Image 1 (cartoon, rainbow, N blue to C red):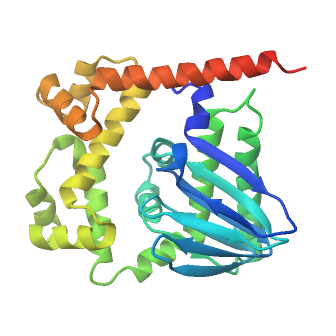
Image 2 (image 1 turned 45 degrees about the vertical axis):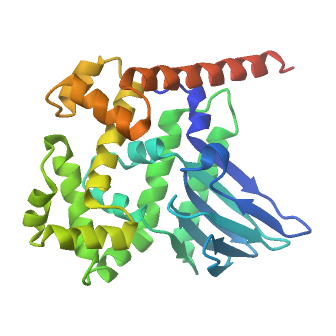
Length: 298
């Protein structure tokens, strides 16, 4: 079970109030290095920059969805304000879940998006959700993984409804469908440890073609994407369940626990047992820090 104190290692929520001068937000730093971020500009203007020096002007109301593949910074002009939320890969996976819409939400979080000129209905829907996410994290005494995950799921659904479906339709060109269908197959097959050739055959393309599409779209090979999904699932089960390593190995489709341990160690640098111990140590440390903080409250 996820420690409630540990939520602050997996989520961030901040309000950016108006100021007299320009302010800069740098996203992927420190514990937020692999976070997915949403920035909602509610008033004023801002400039979104990537590590490739690309620039995108933002005018409120405007929403930016920023995955971890690139480094970003936003310069908020004087007088502008908005809200920033961030979620670790574990929290994103938990929020996406395994429902009919989950496939589309996974596609949604893969690529950066800036949604400008939000219509009134969407703005009124997304603002209280973002505010709720930020507010939940603003009170350490009650911050709950379940509540934050629920807010994030609603935010993802909200963004998908206005942009996700359009992106999927626009992506029905030469590359989009192959990648989207591959990710869908991975969700259905990753526990079966099928070879990449099976995925390519199901998609009606060669393995070279599948490899080229994944590299071009995500800078990762098909096997890297597949292994990433297995590791992600393994981490979640090691952190949240009390099942033994052998039981988790069996559930993930490995023939022997030894194979699972070797695979996990190669991908993460830690054995499954050491990863579980480290994750629990972090959660315990954060819990102690919060408890110490409560003792100082008036």
